[in-house]
Structures are given as structure tokens and as C-alpha cells.
Length: 539
Ligand code: SIN
Image (cartoon, rainbow, N blue to C red):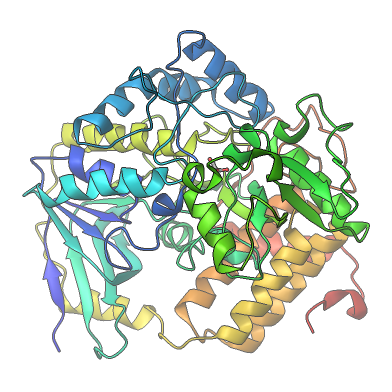
């Protein structure tokens, strides 16, 4: 079969809230949106249970929301970005309502606002209780289908960004249907937007879809982009512990409505940990649950005292529990902390530009600086919507470059050779995920970080470049490991048991690039006199 070649003005890799917002706002430029699955299927956006934070109530203000975001971010947020995003929040909510997205309302027509951890006011706009992502994606997809300037290419996985001498030429990928032999897709255009989501799939316990394993970060790094804050991974305290992969989420909004966290002895262990008890900041709750499990305790979400209409207030959570033969109105829900959101990523400026000319990023793959060291719940859909519009408007203001030399078959051939085989490497992927969870999970220290590094290097050695997905996961894990190693402090969601305090001299970001990674790893090995027993934790 021959290659499929497309020549839009812009290509967007990723079809979640961020990608679709860029696509809708970029008209009249012609855009190609690439999705790994069918549009709207298995994206973190569709799975989002929380909603959009916006200071809409009379008692609230943008200043309150800005302060809550900055307090949560623990000194690492970029205040300009925080203000810019939050000051746009009401506008993006209006945009969504204008295309038909329905938010939950009270009888008097006002928004029925939810409360989540570390928000000083009720300000979470939700849809059907815990189904906000599904409803927002429904609205966006319907609008995309009405838009002539957008072509959606479904079931395509991107292998490389094509660039030479700081010039972007497009992307090259393939249809994910493994029965189609050698069917490459080439998209030739001067502007590439990455909106590929996060990397929770690097960890064995995660709320993220299987396709979220940091692929966008690997693509950007290979194109020469600067990454930043890779060590900041937010663990959600209440993944539902039914042994499923990915782990279903029990939204924080349930605790916002009064659910308790208890151990098997019915002790509400958060009572003496923070004045906000079960609504303390996410990192503190995750750490406390971790401490409980270290003591051999099990942890549960207790909703029994708030059983009225539970099934309609939180239909997704109710249905997950029902499938496991458990009724949250009468039974405790077992919970564990799970990798949920990556704060770091491709470093972008106020316009969503990466350090590579023609490469833009938005959504979870980008590190815009809004979240600092810890993300305030429900700020991320907001960030995606605001930056989606900004990226579209910035690209629209550019004089569109014409690629006068079409991609030659020689260049395409070179990239095909560089792109990797489709062979699955389940054993190695699983080893990597469990090592990253064990060694770079909720609480890290120098020893565990080094163990994580040696596991990754061993997997790299043994797997010998077997699979594209595994290669990306190995590369992204190295960036996380190096960031975690260099950040010798505890700040926000980066917790180190050997550096328990925040270090006031470390209010900088740790930037990384592909060209540096191997020498940094060598330095890390040289600095640590590791004996052979300590090198291997995989079994
Ligand atoms: C949740 O519903 O608890 C998640 C919200 C978020 O992560 O922003």
C-alpha cells in the first residue's frame, strides 16, 4: 500500500479538549487533527470527572481563584500565566455554552457549583455530576463535525516530527490497525501542535488511558524542544482500588460533598492532619494514604452518610462500583493514590510556543507554568481551553510559510527507517511501569531514584529497541528520573523522604533536552557509588 500524504496548513496531534479547541479556533486555516483512536474515545479529556474551575458565584472573584492557584503551586507558578488563564475563565465557559455544552444548573438557572480540595470557594462547573469530560467532548466533537476546515484522521499514531535545520516539515506516522502493512501517513505542513495529553501510563497505577505514556514529550524532545519540571507528577488520592488497569477515579467532588477517608478501623486519619480534613491539598492526602498503607492499613472512601441520590449525583463512580458488586450507599469504596496528572512537559511561553520554531503545545503535554509544583483541581481543562484559543490565534497571526520543497521520498524513507517497529513488548512495559511506581511514585528518595534508573537502563539493554511505545516510555522515564534526582527538596507533589523540607533556594525550574540526557545519566551514575546489589530492583 502507498503512503497517504496530506498537506494542511496546520497539523494537531491529539483530539482531546486542547487539540479540538485549537482546531475550532484556527479557521479559516485548513487543519488536520490526528487521533490514536476514534475521535473522543479513550482520551483523558473524556474521562475527566471534575469540571472547569471558574469564579462565577457572587461570593467569589478571579482574585480568590488566582490566590488559591498560587498557594497550591508552592512558589513555582508563573503568576502572569495564572492571571491570564483565570481572567479568561468566564469567556471559555461562555464559548462552551454557545456550542451547546450543558453544565449542571440549579432550579433558578444559576450554575450548580462543586467544591474541590484547596479551593476557597465553590467554583467547579460540572456536567451530570461526575461526567463533565464526556459532555464537554460531546459539544466540541459536534462542533468539529460542523466545521469544513477540519479533517480528522482517526486511528493514526505519530512516530516522528519531521524537522531539519530548525524547520518543521510536518509529521510521519502510521495507521494503528496492525493488519494494514507498511501504511505510513505523512502530513506535510510548517506548523505542528502537540496536544497529546499526559504520561500517567508510565506508572502501574494510573487514571490515564493506556495511550497516555508521554508520547508527545518523546516526540518534542526528539525534535529538539526543551522540557521542564518533569519530576512533578500529581497523584490523585482516590483511585478506586478494584485491581483494574487503568484505575477508575472517585472524583474529589465526592469529598467536596462530604465523603470521609477512613482506614479499616474506621479511623478518619485526616482529622488531625489539616484543618480542611478530607479536602486538604491533594499531595497531603495522597501522602497520608501512602503512610497508612506503609503501616499495613487499607484505606476507603466512606459515602454511606451521603447516600441520598448518590447514583444520580455521581453516576460514573456509582457504575464502577456496581460492576464490582459494591454499593457506595452501603459499602466502603477501597481507594489508592494513582498517577493522575503531569505538571511538567514541553516548556512553552505565554503563546504556547515551544523552543522549536513551528512547534506548539497545549494541554497536559505542555508545561505553561500555571500549575507550579502542584495543580489546583479542575484548573487543567480551563488551561487547555484558554491555551487552545491562544495557540490558534498566534498561528493565525503568522504569515503561513510555504514548504516549497515537498518532502522528498528520500526524506520520508529516512524517517521511516528511523521510526520503530510495532512489536509489543508487554513484559518490559509492565516491568518499567511497576518500577516507576515503586521507585518514583508518591514518595521518592535518592536510593529509590537510583534504583529506578538502573531498572530503566536494564530494560533498555534487554529490550534492544524492540517497540516504539517502550522506547518512548524509557526516554520519558529518564527525564522524570533526572528531574526527581536533581530536585533535592520536597515541594508540592514532588515528595522526597530524604529532603523533607522545601528548599527556598530551589524556586527554579529544571530544564532538560534530549542532547543532555545521556551525559546527565552518566554523571548521576558517577556521583553514586552503587554496588551491584543495589542496581537491580526488578524481579
Ligand atoms: C477529580 O475529579 O477529582 C479530578 C479533577 C482534576 O483532577 O482536576
